[in-house]
Structures are given as structure tokens and as C-alpha cells.
Length: 333
Ligand SMILES: [Zn+2]
Ligand SMILES: [Zn+2]
Image 1 (tube, rainbow, N blue to C red):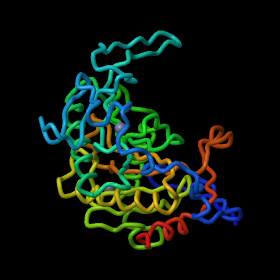
Image 2 (cartoon, protein in one colour):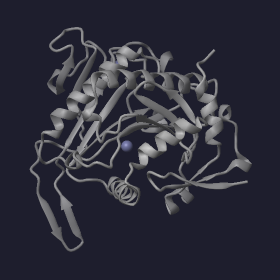
Image 3 (cartoon, protein in one colour):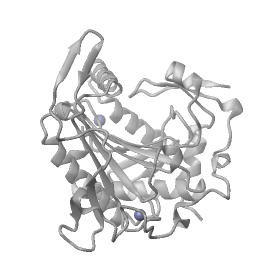
């Protein structure tokens, strides 16, 4: 039986096409797929490899001023938005426009060219998360910024143009419509029930334990009941909080461990597929809201978007979320 499932936090519907469901392992990349680890550890043409650093673009490094860096934050040479621009609005008839003010930074995650968060140690991933936290605080001080997105594109199908592992930060002078809709849904749920929808989801997932992959001291990672695509995972902090910027050092270490576990299992079980990893945190000017709950989402790029998705905003998931959770629950042999 096919089934339509709804995510209680986002209100998004998905068709779980269980009749034509494919087993999770059927989504593994073929044997000839180019693995990240099979690239050379150093690429003389890569601007992120040690020795090739474009120092004019560097913002900061960890450790501070050290010659042998672990993680660097750099400006994007071809930014989507520029911090030097002046904020101006033109609202005239159909011409509704804001100048391209914002920030576009890249976090070089590691000195090694051929690694990824799924192959790094939790301590190395923790340093990446520390840099995201530091840059987030620095950028949010810019009063023109409304919203910050932290994300990673891994692999060509996820939109990555460089192999060298990196995370991106884009800070916008507007709140995207998609985020506005979620805030509205969270507010409505809170008004109706007095509870945070994400806390309710988290507690129910832990109680049912049908889709949980990792249950760590500070986070729960699960395949969504209404997963939009195969292996669509949310990592949700157990402590209700509206922004990644309010996490503690201990929580970030735990998050790094959790991200490493999940991405490692995805890399090993599915032969290093492309994925997107996104931090969903509250807009800067909503930082004192009570009903928003931040989280990290991981979407392996295993199925493609087509006309139905474009026409409806809905997805057809050809896997059962419960089977995907079992597939990712156990450590690799
Ligand atoms: Zn490189
Ligand atoms: Zn909550």
C-alpha cells in the first residue's frame, strides 16, 4: 500500500511508494564510482591544499596564526553576495529588489584533499564545527544580516565543484520564504498545543525507536517518518534551543561524533554517494523566539527531482524510512 505521510514540523507531505519500494542497499553507488579517498591526498592545482593557500582570501585559521593549520575560513573568490556592498531596497511595481549584500565564506575542513566528514576523526570534525560556530558569531554581528545558512555539498550530484572537503556559510539580507513558512508552522503548533513541534517529534521518535540511528547524550539522529528521499536524516539536539550559536562545547563535540558516525555509515554502505548537509537554525532576528528548534539535516543524493516534485513541492520516496533506519543503525562490520 502506498501511503502519504506528513512531517509534523514542516507540514510537508511525501508519498512513500512502498509497493515499488527498493531496498536501501539498491541505492549504493556502482563499484566504478570515484571514491573521495581514491583522489590524491594533495592536488597541486587545488587552492585549498597546503602550500597553495590564497592568503589574501583568508579570514581566520585554527590554531590561530599557526603555520600548520587544521581548519581555515576563507572568502569565496566568486561570492554569491558581497559584504562590501551597500544595503539598498528598490520596491517599484514588479521591480522588487535588494542589493546583493551578504557574506559567502568557505570553511576548509582539513589539510588533506581526499577526505570528508565521514572519513575524519570526531576530533577533526569538532574543529570544523568550532570554526562554523566562530564564523556564525562573527557574521551575526553584521546588522544587515537576517539569516545564516551553513551547508556542505559533497560530490558532484550534490553541487560540489571542488573535491577538497569544505563547508559553506552564506549570510542573507532577507529571510527565505521556505524559512518563513517553517517559522509560521512552528508558531501555529506552539499556539495550538503550547509545545515545540520538534521536541514532540524528537520524544516520539525516541519512544517508538523505529527510525532512530544514533541516540547520543545530547542528540538523536533518525530517518524521518516522512522522509522526502532515501536516508533523509535529521540530527536533533535534545536540549530545546533555537540556534546552533547557543550550543556548548560539549554539545558540539557530541554533534561532531554523531555526524561522523552517520556520514561514515552512508559512505561505507552506499559507496560514498553525494550528499547535502544543512544546518537549520533560527533567523538572526528570531533569536529570542521560544518555539523554534534548530537541527542538522543530511540528504544523500540518491534520487532525482523531476516534474512531479517541481509541480507539487511534494516528493515520492521509493524506500521505507523504517528500513533505511535499520540499514544505518548498526556499525559497519
Ligand atoms: Zn585540495
Ligand atoms: Zn523544541
